[in-house]
Image 1 (cartoon, rainbow, N blue to C red):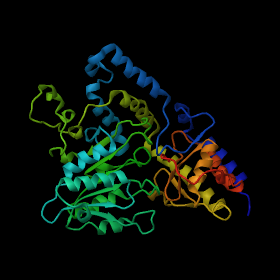
Image 2 (image 1 turned 135 degrees about the vertical axis):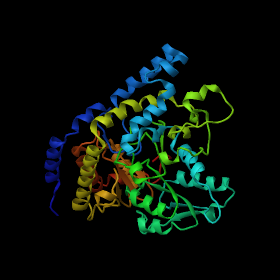
Image 3 (image 1 turned 180 degrees about the horizontal axis):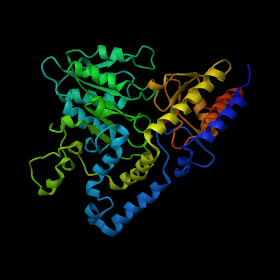
Image 4 (image 1 turned 120 degrees about the vertical axis):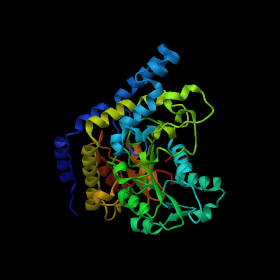
Amino acid sequence: MEDRFPKYRTLAEQMDRWDSLKSFRDLFHIPPATVYMNGNSLGLPPKAAGQALEKAFGEWKDLAIGGWMAGSPPWFHLAEELGRKMAPLMGASADEVVMSGSTTINLHALVSTFYQPSGNRTKIVADELNFPSDIYALESQIRLKGLDPKKNLVLVKSRDGRSLNEEDIAAAFDDTVALALLPGVLYRSGQLLDMEMLVREAHLRNIVIGFDCAHSAGAVPHRLSEWDADFAFWCSYKYLNGGPGSPAFLYVNRKHFSRRPGLAGWFGYDKARQFDMSLKFHPAGTAGGWQIGTPPVLSASTLLPSLEIFASAGIEMLRRKSLALTSFLMDIIDGSLSQQPYSYSVGTPRDEVRRGGHVAVEHEEAWRICRALKKRKIIPDFRPPRVIRLAPTALYSSFGDVLAVASALREIIDGKEYERFSPERDAVS
């Protein structure tokens, strides 16, 4: 077989020279001598994040409780300010997005609001490929309504174990369904669902629909308001580079602002009257009404510089580069690493409109190959049973990085490097 890697190297060099976003790489801390391909699990820190954290700490030190109104921005309004900055990435109005809680807490807050089983409509539609945490939460919400998850949680089946067919999902939307909750991008395969079509099909049947956008926010453009999605939620530590455990976001379509949040908390109160300390709950007439607890000011501070970087780069430009990076990786796998002795395959859709920001490279020795990659200071992650997830992230990954990963995948098989590692998985993979 012809060795195409010299051609790939030339192509990578050309594409890096032409990359109009390459200067953004300098805005991030990249671990020394490391190729980082795990931004879909934990994004790298912007260099300005440390300064932002020090600034927030300085306000706490110098202003103490005065920071709630005298901070920059005031801590009291920080969740709404971050929501305003996040909204353009999600195709939403500023008051439809707010920073709040964690991903699963936001799922509970939203589903407790929008899942109102009555009469024949008692079921929730989700899917069998969804991130397990969502399923755990949906089952608990059904139990809280006094119903049985075995009867009232419908998990749409995958035809191939990797992807979902939107027509199969729509077929599950019948008159017994009260709510649908689906991922924007599937966490394992990287498939991007047609959210617009799913909203349309759900609303034709009077079904409320929401999305877990944890693996799509910051990687692909969204038009949540244009699509008329009812609600959505996502984390900020993956493509959004907020840091480990950084707070999450939620979206509520403005047509639902008059609804009473299912889980009420003090920070969801109308800001103008919050310190009246009334025992009667008056929710904010925006997405802010779905906040529950006090915003974590220090951990939220690192999101400010990250969202400024996104505003400067532009999500459409980032998407264009992301598609080019993932296409380049898949081309190398298909063209040079799919045959024996390598036997790698791609479990991610080739069609750009069906692909998120990462590539699922499959191999029977995926776990041990991941260990070998990490030994080489190339950082992927593993998802069972046989997926090496690789996320060349548009803000800080280069085409040279992609080539380095592909070269390592080849060399690890050539030298049987994976055989040096135990097949036993670590607790965190």
